Each structure stands twice: as C-alpha cells, then as structure tokens.
Image (cartoon, rainbow, N blue to C red; front, side):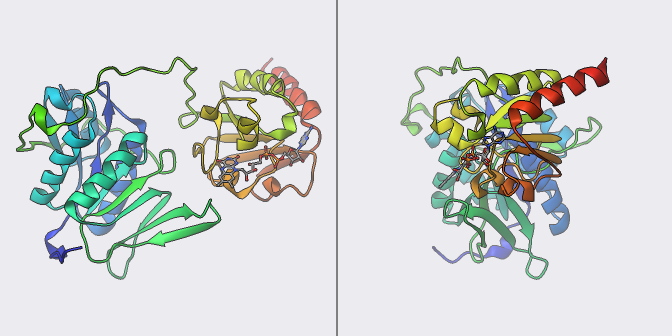
Length: 337
Ligand SMILES: Cc1cc2nc3c(=O)[nH]c(=O)nc-3n(C[C@H](O)[C@H](O)[C@H](O)COP(=O)(O)OP(=O)(O)OC[C@H]3O[C@@H](n4cnc5c(N)ncnc54)[C@H](O)[C@@H]3O)c2cc1C
C-alpha cells in the first residue's frame, strides 16, 4: 500500500444502500453506530447515496441524523452494479477523504467494499460485530468473529484511510428518527456512461419464499434438533402467533432440511436482538450464541440442565419442550383472557 497523509482524512461515512428506492434496514443501524463514533471523534457523520430519484431517501437519512448526504442521482445507478458504484464512491473518497467508511455486510455491501478498498488502497475488515474508537490514538478497533466464530479478532488499519468496515446487519443499535434535524444534500461531481459498467442487469427476481424478518422481530421463537422433526416447528408457530413473533432455528435444524436457511440464527445465519428470544431444544453452541446473545431476554427450554444455552439464558426451564411450550401458550391465553 502506498504512503498516505492520513491527517488529511476526516469524518465518518456510511454507505446508504438502497434497493428499489428504499433504504436497507442496515443503513439505520450504520447511522446509529456512526453517530456514536462521530461523537467520540468529534467529527461529522455523513452518508453516500446512489440511485435514481433519491430525494425522499436523502430526507430520511437527515432525519436519522446524517449531516451531509453525498448523492449521485442517475438512471445508470438505479440498480446496484459493482462497476458503477465502485467508480463513483472511490472518486468521492478521493475528493472528500473520509477517515472511516461503514458499509452494511449485505450481499451488495460485501461485493462493493473490497472493490472500493482496493481502488483507494486501504484496509477493510469484513463482517464486523463491534466497533470502538481507541481513546489513545483515535483509530477504530474493528472486531469480528474469525475461525468459525471460535475467536474474536480485533483489527486496526493504522496507516491507510479510510478505515473501512463492513458491518453485520442486526448487530448495531438503530438511529432514532427526528424530522426536525437539519442536514445538507451535496450532489457529487460525477460522470457515468454505459461503457463504465460491464455488467448488465437483465432482471431482478424476488424470491417467492415467505419473507422472514428476523432482524426486525420483537419476539423470536427458535427451535433446534430438540424439536425431533419438522413438525416440531408447528408447535413453535402456535407460540409465535400468540406473540406476533417470528420463527428462528439452529443450523442443525436447517441442515436436516426441517426449515429454510432464511430462519437460521447464528454466525452463518442472521444476528438478532429481539426483546425476547425463546431457545427451544437448542444446545447453545458458540456459533448459535454468536447470533443471539445480545437479545434483551433469553428464555431457554431444554431437557439437559448442562446445556450451554443456560449460560446465556435469563430464564431457564429444564424440561421437555413438548410439555413446556403448550403450557406457556395456555398461560398466555389465560393471562390475556
Ligand atoms: C463454521 C460453523 C458455523 C456454524 N454456524 C451456525 C449458525 O449460524 N447457527 C447455528 O445454530 N449453528 C451453527 N453451527 C453449528 C453449531 O456448532 C451446532 O452444531 C448447532 O447450533 C447445534 O444445533 P442444535 O442446538 O439445534 O442441536 P444440538 O446441539 O443437537 O442440540 C439439541 C438440544 O436439544 C435438547 N433436546 C432434545 N430433545 C429435547 C426436548 N424434547 N425438549 C427440550 N430439549 C430437548 C438437547 O438436550 C440438546 O441440548 C456452525 C458450526 C460451524 C462449524
């Protein structure tokens, strides 16, 4: 990597990923986290937003607390392409020199971030779950699970800028909305031609699978191998319906084909932080805990009193889930009348 004058770099940027003209939920989390970091660094929190007809989204970003929204509005930027987005964002980084750049670790973010990092000659940490400013030198400490989640690695980028991270969706606290906030919209000076983009989007097909929104759920009712068979999830669905909750699962249950991968919680699934997480017949392997141990309240139901899930549970019930879950359901019914 070439030597940079890192003192020229200032402020924190988030990539405001949009799809079909809507900001991705992770953007609100990046803004929440970015504002905390910006406060500690005493700098601005800015966003970069590419798309077509993006005005509404700029207003939303400002309401979340972004100070400057750098925008590129063009029909060729309507849908994400690696070439188009990399070109414009890399040029913007050269021009405005942010010291930190946060990108959601979505499929798009994971495609985009390494391309930008190599274009602007800097370091990138993928899939971070914790970010902190080092009070000694002001650099960002980026923590992520490594080696299958068995160690947490904390990584710094001492000599190159921006310090780039992709951040796991669902981990950081969301920014609050305040429509009275003021901010600036700064159109980027860019040019883009069809020839700049080597990929052509022919069609975007939305999966017709039931959309599972574990990340936004207040109640998650998760099941593992203790369910014995796919039918076990029917019991959990009854509890989920009572609570307006969403069904989660361990990877073991997904591997068995009992439920779709979109329900999987954990290191290779989704990271969640609901008000209440029910772990039913889940042993609590470290890779599962990595995805749910930040939940406000964890209720574990397991036959084995030594199951590691009890080490993170706020309430533990040692028993057969096929007896315990129906009792919880009938108690809920009687409380609610
Ligand atoms: C690189 C890597 C990534 C991984 N990523 C993930 C991930 O993202 N998410 C994930 O979950 N796992 C992940 N795993 C797998 C993980 O290590 C475990 O294998 C998995 O979480 C175990 O699932 P389980 O708890 O459902 O099954 P088990 O470990 O088999 O546990 C079943 C539990 O059910 C209990 N039980 C049985 N019958 C009943 C009953 N009738 N009532 C109550 N309790 C009962 C048992 O006591 C036991 O504790 C990953 C592994 C690796 C190596």
